[in-house]
Image 1: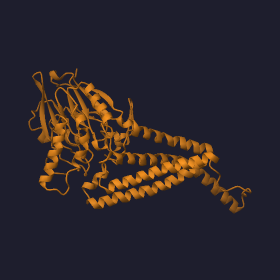
Image 2: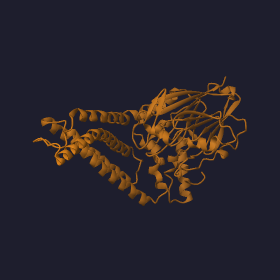
Image 3: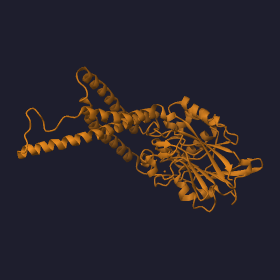
Image 4: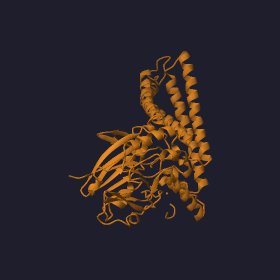
Length: 446
């Protein structure tokens, strides 16, 4: 471990805590919660009156009770988020993620409803202004009993509510089901110089477990069983075991201990794996932290490759498995990865597979390197846990931050695969970007 350093909106920015004074940053976060809460209050009031026009009599009273109770729960979620941040348990408690998910879902669905309602209300305002000016100039007169601004059309309000229900339903599905909807992606990768003994060799990749967010040992066990069911030759974990504390993984050690592969299980660190390091501790405290954290990897059956390499031998031939510590493109990420160091024991013509958590490392360091790295495996982006993943169309907002954000890429005869992640962070769910188990089969190019 060479000293200490540190996804986009939901992943990266919250952890600038490691570059700012702790108390100052905490106050900033708490103030942000208050400001967002006040903003939500405005959305809540506008939505209430927008939907109120659809109900009358007994239906109106039922609507008011239901709306009041759901709003109360959202405000309670704001309070729990505030309380969790104040206690310094940011992202360390699965319940925090649940409350954050409720708040995000409520804000997004109400923003969509209000945006649709604005289309109608903008037209109503223009009509009202026209009537007012006409009456003022004596061009037209306002009919008795009428108003300048016409009432909302029921159909338009219903349409707005219907459209807003789409993100509401999909996000709720993502929170309740999508976050554990493990999917297996099978990819064949062909190489001209693959050692013949490794023809058909299967590597199972998982990434971004984020143990502090996980809230179901049963579901995680099912995911582990799906990995084992692929009968992999090698299991590689590409970083972010935890959110911000090594203790988060403790309840899941017996689960991940069940992972099995013929040639072993290997791992590297991700940016989040550095966040629990004592900020004001002496060297001994820091080393004790890492020793304890590394022992947890070992207990789960993972061999860590911290800027190291190891030979995977099969039938008298071998490939070099490399692992680097985290190297991220942003100034707030740890840059502990040392590719040169990991290549120390590699010959010029060795077939190399590299584990590197952040895909930006591939463009910045791997491709320009004079050593040909045949295959790099990364994670980190999560596919932003939101997007569209169809056979011929893939999209997520994260692509505007990370050009290499999901799937297989090839440049200069070298491959990069970016895994969507096994767990989740911040928003406690996944919409469209389901958690991924990747099975890469190595084959000889013909």
